[in-house]
Length: 424
Image (cartoon, rainbow, N blue to C red):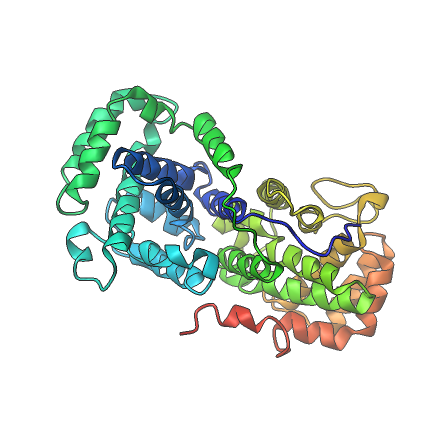
């Protein structure tokens, strides 16, 4: 068991994790944010941006779509050059980041990253924020026009892309930004670097340049809360699922006798456990009935996706495994890793129980939320068969009423910060 009291995590690696999670919504295209960050940084370099501004605009590109959770929204954003409801995800991204001090500097540019250049002068924002917002808008649209050509004919299609973008100079985009793009796009290297195998390496390299901004444990929890909101908006039936799992898991962990530091980490793992569901098709999550074998096979991939997002964050350590093991059974049943019993830590076992408990309490498309008696019956049956940890389920039975209120979100002592994400 990891007994270290703190998590030593760099902000940039968490930013990359957010982009990795959000880009999963693209299903077949999971590098959009990386490419936008790259394009923006290349244009910025051509314009003589400082190293700090280049790092800023790269991270802004990574974060610009943090308000996107559903396939439908993603599809509309990539299939229309100017979508009437594009402002929705801009507003959500702004609301998520504006009160989180380490990332609040990105909030205003994200709010206006689909606002045409000619309209930005009417907004009450700084010249720098307007410039950065428009740079991301330009980079975003360059990538959208290019996406279908990567890995095939991008070098043949690039002239038409440049021509299309140039037609929006002075209206949608600042002329100086378009002119800088026109200069850098003349090298084949600019376009080739945008293909998957190259852009992932570029982002990996950037991730190992420290932001020199280590996060406090409180900041990691707040950022995890933001990430849990993003994934829980994927479906109306999972609204607040992650935060309630985190609440229940922390309560069980505390009652079990784990240290306050371990309880903090359990809570963070609970908040992050379903990140991989951003890559699960909306129609599977919202299906009003049992999943067929194909749909179940797709659903069963989500906890591995969670692991892939989190394991690259240096310092997250055991927390990544606790989050990813939430569908594993003590008896080897479950998915996707099938760890041996000795490798399934107490913390992971607690999160597994909390996840099932909360899911049973919550309304789902195929059933209403269950009463406490029904929940305990299922929990105890899973314990008797060896899937869930017996010691943890005995504790849950003893504290059943409080676990039930926490799982429903009616206990006023749990994660009220979640309710304040959009408070004015």
